[in-house]
Image 1 (tube, chains in turn red, purple):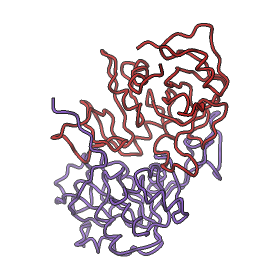
Image 2 (cartoon, rainbow over the protein chains, first blue to last red):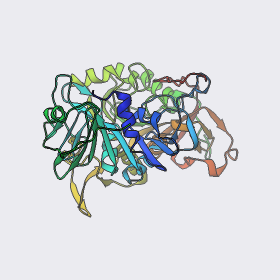
Image 3 (cartoon, rainbow over the protein chains, first blue to last red):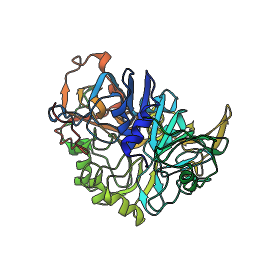
Image 4 (cartoon, chains in turn yellow, brown):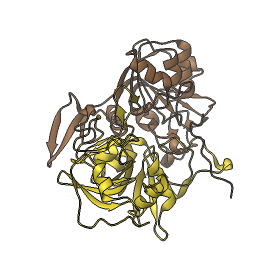
Amino acid sequence: MALSREQLAQRVAKELKDGYYVNLGIGIPTLVANYVPEGIEVMLQSENGLLGMGQFPTEDEIDADLINAGKQTVTMATGASIFNSADSFAMIRGGHVDLTVLGAFEVDSQGSIASYMIPGKLIKGMGGAMDLVAGADNIIVTMTHASKHGVSKLLSECTLPLTGKGCIKKVLTDLAFIEIKAGKFHLLERAPGVSVEEIIKLTAGELVVPEHVPEMQF
Amino acid sequence: MSGFNKVVGSYEEAMTGLTDGMTIIAGGFGLCGIPENLIKEIKRKGTKNLTVVSNNCGTTDHGLGVLLLERQIKKMVASYVGENANFEAQMMAGELDVELTPQGTLAEKIRAGGAGIPAFYTATGFGTPVAEGKEVREFNGRKYILEEAVTGDFALVKAWKADTYGNLVFRKTARNFNPMVATAGKITVVEVEEIVQPGELDPDEIHTPGIYVNRLIQGSFEKTIEQRTIRSNQ
């Protein structure tokens, strides 16, 4: 079975370590905050200028001056800090954020990522994604392995305009956890009940498959 | 106006001197911390062919979006424009010039503009469409692109509190781009929720010193929320 959005978030959450400062992108990455393992502390960075993002507010706590990068109303965790956008991106571009999780349309075996634009179709802009992928060393991309029509999103070369070149090392899809090394995809784990054959079939770029591919643990 | 007193009497006065074809830099992230009344004054004035530099372009009927509705914007420099149907339509029709700029690069371009730094190198955008036509230089084995600073004829800022000298305090994430924007205008206009007398703000607490501020006005704000998300009251 392909992973649900919640399971994707749960698997990413296993990569969190105590004391990590983490930036979570919009969508599935945001859900990771719900699965922080017990006994560890992480602080969430929101690139609009908040370190220590808390949970959503109650009706009484809503404050129009306090939002996250997805423009959702939020609260501040204990020990939070507020700063301007230049300081926020100094944290990001200066490599101070320990883990970045973001979505994508395509990733290729060179580690390039396309996530912000489908020419002639979707014009939204890159927001902070280009800064995040250029500035962070530890990035996990979460996305579906293939489109609804079975077209692979793990390619030998991205077809869409790039968000970043040669910067992605880890991809978690609904079918597999994959590492990118030396111009190839390497299969690390498979989703429970998903066969290696299915993953091979839906991976367009070169995929290195070890003899034993463990199922993901949650 | 006398001495260091920056307070003006009306929004009309606050935006005096804005003419067709000028460049405006505006603070705000989404609809949070936007100079909403200054934007409405530009709509009222009907100034056209504006170049607007801001992280977003409002929503269809709020913030900078109202200037799009009136077709007052010729060119938009922004990082994310996803919440505005008009934007996409005008861009696709070739009526609106758009320069999509990574958010951190945008913040730094404005910061640099205000600090007298003409350009800077950044890894952000290397190898992407953003790098097209830009100088590439290698430092310590990594490639960077040259990004130029921006300044505006007018810089529009929303702060929480100010003293009459234009010393500013921002509130929560409504700070965002506003402190950099305040530094990057030939004329910086600030609207706030409260104006106090000099000496009433603790100098240690001031986010933006009054030297950057030319005009100051107190207004009342709608503060529209884009994504109202709540948790249940448990």
